[in-house]
Length: 341
Image (cartoon, rainbow, N blue to C red; front, side, top):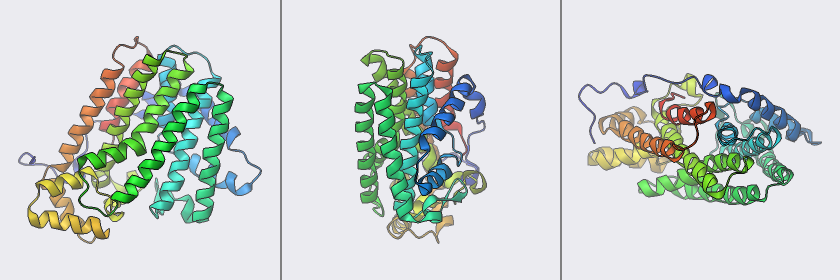
């Protein structure tokens, strides 16, 4: 795939419109405040370092899309209960936060969202052990939810995330990773937690297994679309907005889809350039690599695939009754592919 004549600079290849996430999530604003209260309460530990590290990362900002998915799914399916959806939303946020703590240690990351990572501040041991605390606390909370289906979904999900971490580690520095291996990593590392979040909302609404599966399919496709755009933004986002340097994935030796496509459609010299950078994690030739990514149309190719998954997500919930929460779920699929950070 080659870009059309006059393709703009890769740094400007962002969508012309980005939705305001705060406005999009307005139907669950009260619920999200309730989730924050649950997080503050359940984060408390008699161990001061856990409180310090957990609070540092949980309250560091971020989109909070995963807990929002729990709430939107529950409300779209008719739940008006306050406690269960909010508790399960906090569970998902704790699991996600634990994975971030562990990811940053594995990736030797120093910055996240423009701030120092927990491991950069307190060291690897403190970050890993605090992540373990969040995992175990989340399972205590699942027991409190009193719905056995929650335990099954989250046990399978956390196991899949761990598999995804190992698979990504195996792929690191390997320029021979193909589309299927890449997609499997983002399914396990990202999509399964989106899937679980939507399912937990359905479980909180006490709907049948078919409805749970439908919401899970929505979350799964949304998660893949979201991660595909994350991988695009690694080469297109403004570092001042994204909080990380352009080419950060490349510096970690991660063969993401833009690079895989660029190697497949570039000249032999261009492919060798990208392959060497993936193997070594060196970014001295980043400007040249960005030129290859642009010339081969890797960014529009990856965006187009994200749009296909976004459409799949919308199709999965097409038959839900109209409501502000259903509309927000639909708009989230568009936000996932139009965002610039």
